[in-house]
Every structure is written in C-alpha cells, then in structure tokens.
Length: 172
Image 1 (cartoon, helix red, strand yellow):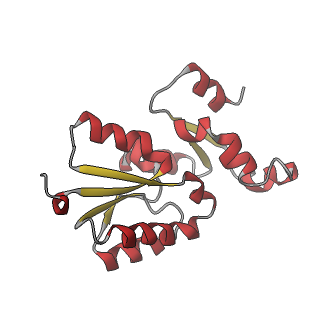
Image 2: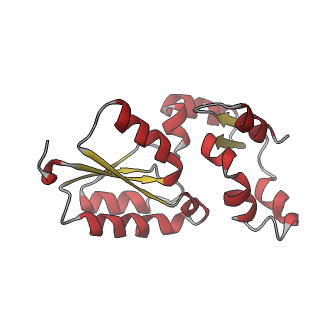
C-alpha cells in the first residue's frame, strides 16, 4: 500500500500511544499512521469528541481510512454519535481498561467490585500530573475523599511492569 489514499490513520488517546505504536511496529504495519491526543482529556471527557472531530476534519483530505483508538472514555455516547455520523470505528468498550483487560476480563473485574480504581502503566507513571494536579488535589487535598471515597479496590493493569511502576501503583 503505497498510495496515501490507502493509508490508515489511527487517532488514539495519548495514554494508549505506546501500545498502539507497538502494535504497528511489531506487525510491520508501515501503512498505518498514528496521531495521539493528549491523555489529560480524560479529566474533561466531554472535550474528547470535539478533539477527535478536529483531528478527523484535519485528516479528511489525506486519509480515506481512519480508526479511533479510544473507548467511550466517559463521553456518555457523544463519541459514538460523532463516529457513527462520520462512518469511523473505534475500540470497543466503555473504558480503555477493557483494551488492557479484554471485554470479558474487565466485566468480571467490574462485576466483582464496581468501586474499583484502575491503573495502567501510563496512569501510574503520570499519576501526580494527571490525577493529583490534574484534579486539583495538590491545591485542595480535602477533595481526595470526594473523588476517591467510593473506591474500595485498586487494580493495576500492568503492560510492562517495572519495579518503579509497581512501587508507584502500590502507593509506596
């Protein structure tokens, strides 16, 4: 596939960048281009559809084939409505955690304890910036219980466990 019209663009969440790029590289998918949006959009999921739409608009002249590397990610179906109107597919599921745990695995985890906070390598590595500072807990630590009071379990969905990430995920 050498014609640019036959290239595939994957518009992905920055939190999935490493994994999406690894899939492309390990499978020699040299006809796939990947563009990532900032992972901190998850702090304001209502902004995800507009950010994806802007990338779709920018790609319209260059790509006939586009796929979105997001789950619903808290958009409440807004992302799906946009993608359906544009004829673009996305990753299945409500959260990217399903991407890591598989649909049935995530359903089992969720059914066993709905009050679960999920960590990935990316989130464990960037927790202070994306969660602590991103949600204002560095300025208003009293909000911690408001944000996290309904969580009863932590599940670390590790992709490439390192001692540093395991330590971060454990909260030590």
